[in-house]
Image 1: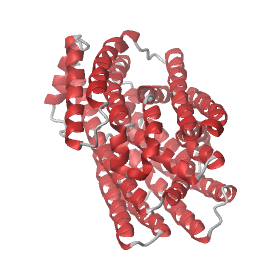
Image 2: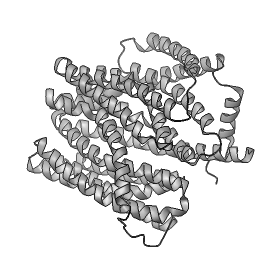
Image 3: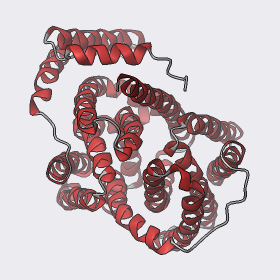
Image 4: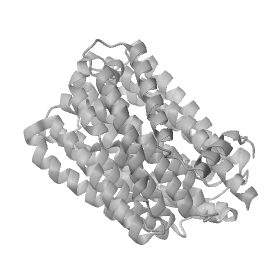
Amino acid sequence: MLKSRSSLSSRIAKNSVVGMVEKLFEIFAGVASISILARYLNVESFGLYTIILTYIGLLITLGSVGLDRIMVRNIAANKEKLPEYLQDMKGASIVIAGFSLILIIITSYLLRLDNEMTIAAVSLFAISELLAMYGTIYMSAFKAFEKMEYNTFITFLVKAVGLVGLITVAYLNLGFFAIFAALAVSNVFKAFLTISIFKKYFSRKHIPVAFTNSGAIIKEVLIIAVSIFFAVASLRMGVFMLKAFGALKDVAYFQAANALFILVQPISFVFVTALYPVLSNRELNPILIFENAAKYIFIMSLPVMAIMFFYGNELIVLVYGSNYMAAIPAMRILILSVAFAFLANLFEICLLAKHRQNMLTIGWGISFFVNLVLGVLLVPKYGLLGCVAAMSLSYMTLFFALYYFTSKYTVFKIKKNIFLKPGVAFLVMVFYLCYFAATGKPLSIKLDILNSLASLFLYTAVLFMLKAFSIKEVELVKNLLALKIFSK
């Protein structure tokens, strides 16, 4: 039993670390890309770029994420059936890609993106995204076999190719269309690289496309897709709200604030992704794993929220430039919902692991409609600030809805006392940052980094002083740190 527990800890640690490396590079590449484009394009063009990326990304995500989650769950439970699952998933992905392309064409028409250059950019980018979605099926197999290092390697190369492409476009001043051409090249590269790695390390045999079980798969994907639609639409709704009630510059400011909020989500997402195969496979004690995960995710979320709130203005200026100062208040409002969003990620995988994706759909649906109703009420009057306030409140709604469903329909529960001691440590950290950060002084990167590190040290010290970690939890952390993470 001890060996089994050690093995499980090793796998979770390995998957978390490898996944975090992947997400950190994604964050770096994302910040670098946004910074390049925000400076290369004017504010209105950046708004148009955001609109195109938003609705294409939304429509592609609906199918790809659903396929990914089904693949990981099913293969994790029955690894010997990989070829059978893969050929069915390939058939389902082709059908979903067709529907997605039709929806993209319709949406482009409704958004009146009828400029020739814009149509060409949309078409090229959409087709490349669909091809990348096909390749994502193979990446799901890597996750199911807990070979996250393959995904990390692929992500590193693909993001590097995309970043080099954007730098080339900006340096040579190749124009708006060339931006999407560079993104398309990285998508095509991702698909071919993923399939090549799969054939080399998993199966050299030809796995045909099958449509036998496509109907059943698509039906299940649609259930997840509805929740994904609500999730992604909630994240991006501000783009469409501000497009309807504001100007392209408001869209750009929203994107500036929202992108930073999204970029911190991998901090919790990586951890819960590493847990997903374990919870799906029912190894050891999933209830204990869930309780510890909830506690650590909450503890991680609080300093992120504090530092982003107090130093978000420096981040906005550093990443986007002084033209995006109007995005600072919006970013601060959004960042207040970080803890709720982090824990919602955990509730999502618990509901999926227990085949309660219908509850996940309902939870995100409630959040979506709260966001929509509040947006309609607040955006026309308060503009950008009303938009992000509606979004932040919708995240809080999502947290309570998913917490209720997780408690009622699964075996997973949260002990409410886990929030008390981290909350006290958080208040101490906030008081420190109020004194040292709210000085009105000019940007000083060195001083801000030192203050951030000092506040993190203070937060951690208070947690230990309050004995927020039990002896068993401290021993678990020591064991995880002592394990040879990359050994099998």
